[in-house]
Image 1 (tube, rainbow, N blue to C red):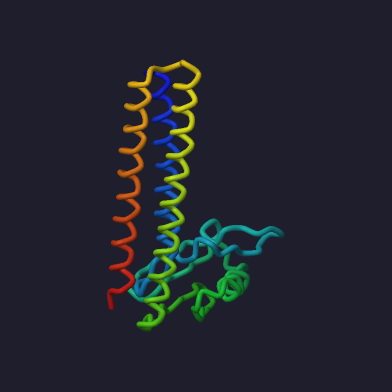
Image 2: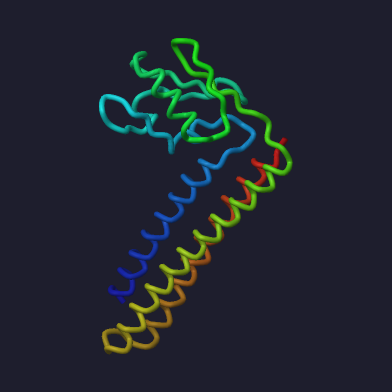
Length: 187
């Protein structure tokens, strides 16, 4: 029974990582509101190397439709502005010499629907990842039963436990997707 617990704990740990990735990926999907996570994928060339924008600047959202990027070193302001333009996020940065302001344009109905489609596709990929973890765990348990390491009853209990974990984490992905979809469709 101890071996099954280990398999379940390993599966749950991997499923939890998928949930964390889901939250991160969903956070990067743009909504009508300003969200500093939108800039997470932007890299800035400074000091001779590429660095994530959040390591060279303070990023905040002081207003619902405005993101403020304040580099810690004013000499890289131009590089930060170029990096934001190059990332092709659909923003037009305005540089006043101290900070960069990004005005978040209102999303069109068509763009909102496209973002929801993207969101649903991403959520399905995460569900597939969870099911893949379930399959791996089930194979380990079945192999342990076949090899005679565990009894058939223990094997069934282990498979049921893995299925409960799978259902729990898929429901969590669905909940995250529903919340994000409402956020996107909110005008």
